[in-house]
Length: 332
Image (cartoon, rainbow, N blue to C red; front, side, top):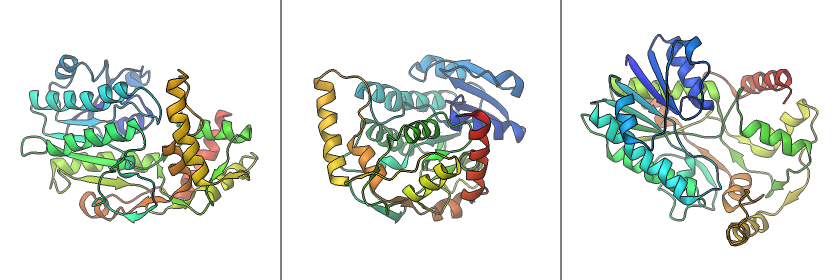
């Protein structure tokens, strides 16, 4: 692995992956729609563009030996066609561009949401089947794309899919600012009984996983054609974990609650009502969000341990301390 392109490299996880590649002395390029002002200082080639443009991709990937595909339309609410266009058609374009340039290794960023349904998922591994009834268009589009990537694995183009769970850390522009804002305004309510265990992944560990996966494809390729769950390897009680975090920031803890079934039905109603009423903002509750907040979802990382040599280097406690310092410094 000598020359790597990171698609979506200007995002939260992408930036961490790029910094790791640069630190390892690997020639790196970033392809993204959003600006990447750090590119020049890091000595990284930056190409502004969209993975929906296959000709742009074919030109951009020429001369590289590895693609790390992090570009995606995320979120649990939005236009179904936009999810399909970016996550499915965009991924097909990535595969076509890799083949056109004889690129031998592709690492794809998937999500554990591809196996989410309504029930708890406790310590399950990659043999868990894809969901039968997806809870949001994002999860469905990512499942379709992951299947495409894994089916494309061959002696010519080796592929692997990683499913990092709830990536958090300094520089997060989504989860942490949103949680802090809702908690300060006392808008957060516990969904369910509050016993649910969930996986989290510290950003440095997530970046490690992508580098390890890419190196594996250029080495023994024991992970080729397979998906892998990525996390800290130790689930946390979601609501206790959040409240400890809030206490250390002198933010009101979450004390109010709503039963899971009520939240789930409310989410189902809002998912139907908002489009009919032509309300474009995201509902305060959806079925996916109710499941995410009330049910346990943690996964075995034994396969990633064995095949990729992935072991979290930064503990959950160390990660929290670093985040607290970042939040206080950033005045979020």
